Image 1 (spheres, rainbow, N blue to C red):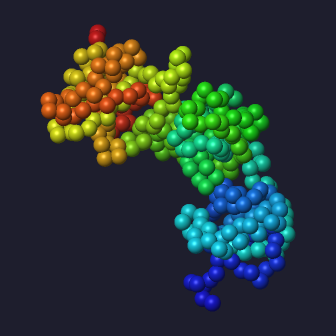
Image 2 (image 1 turned 45 degrees about the vertical axis):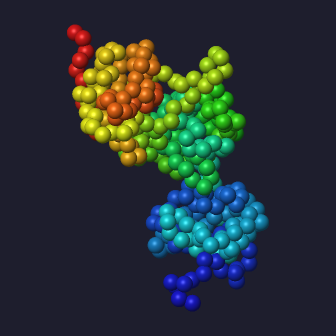
Length: 341
């Protein structure tokens, strides 16, 4: 059989709890192997970057039936096993264990891989994750993403000792209920060590943060995430208040500029900064006031208000998670110098 039509599995091998994976992406890392294999059972060892082209690996399951389960699943699936979009060829290995290699996720490091079970991507904000983990030390960076295992986060601490303290205290625990949306019953943290040592965060957004670099550009397509609601004294959902408002503008028949927004919103108090950006095909803006009280008055007064007669440029307002806009890095941003002397 030609290499172009080679089978994804080879059945002539005796089943083993160690699987041999071929055609992996260049310098595939342990986390990627674990992500591919762990839905089928517990991974106790891996060996990456094997072969002349460094595109092969071995994965050892805790139990033989788990390895058989993975092979059987992909043998009958119309969707091949993939890593980074590349089809991975799987077969049983001749070896029955991986020797002289460290178990993935058990080698202490300064970066934790956290799987948040029982939630969707928008249920737990990056601010909540930061709040929970910063109780154990300074959090340098956070990156969140979605994988087959669910909603996950990489959390970088200063050193392995701090990361170990957080892991020992939080692994298997739940995020406090009051920090979660109403529809989330509970969520559990499953924590292991990552092979990373320094996360590469390119943008500040609701999916990634670098707390060591305040001048890092903000991703304009992800500047706003969903704020986590809280419960008021009356037991009803209460929106978190902020001195910064997020304005969504619909039915834009006329141009809406920074000057136009300043004119509209300054009727309720000093407008410090305005940022306009495009998101999901619509126009949005962030308007910063000096305090929450002023923002709350403006929000209540302008919600549903049309900037122009005829129902044009209608405003829908909510509170932003931001408290101080970084105008040096936002696109289409102007700082309004209308501060009273």
